[in-house]
Image (cartoon, rainbow, N blue to C red; front, side, top):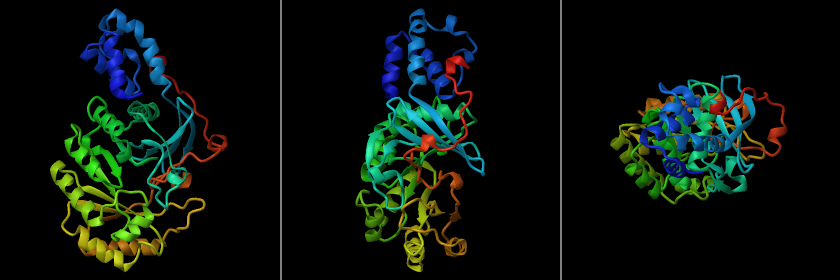
Length: 349
């Protein structure tokens, strides 16, 4: 389901703008139907009241949590089953953040990521994206949503931007706290500039060398690192939000002095921050994480040379929930996990 289809259905059932807003607000905030100042029976038209149970049941059926894997740092990896049985993963992050998935699988095929190994299975609808937020909010507050889970948001632009618009308005998420993470592409940059709600941008850079980027991200748009940084810089200046340049540190691949020189050349004076993310080891990957000493050396050297750099150890590493390497592994639902209790629809709460 897509959000505009949900709005059409509400309007056909007799909802006016205020009724529609209240229903959507209750849904995406995981609130009960009677959370407003006026009771539903007096506020909603009778035709809408009659249609609401079926609509609420459909919203509740969009997604459900089937396993919870708590991390030692306070994060929780959530296995979310969609209505057709496909699974995606969300990660509740420390400090009221949530990482959501925008696709089942991914077509980019990053060599260091598990998500794309089976390719793209299907798009996640805009309502299914918001449903991940609603499920998370039923567990704890969410004030930041990052699109860094399964999938490439730029390959599902209509659904992702529709979800972002709802979350940035009725969903009450500050625009700078909505983070669109992407490998880039001309169409994505163009659409972001035209969006009513403009999220912050996180660009998956990973190397300053074009040929290495083509190897690591084999089906990413064929833009040079220079073109990607230039396009990101224009968007950052237009929105006032610094770019978050993402860099998965791979031992012996992109952690050498050549990359330090390339980063200084590319990012000096740019409105952004470089996030160095030590590789989150996954089964069967041909890559390793650099030593902690090497990671810290890179961060210090880049910072010394004028590049605002943060060394970020991924949240939820002990439950394989960080660094964008989310994946519903085969048999995950059968793994020992924390049982899900108290999961109810908004109307039952």
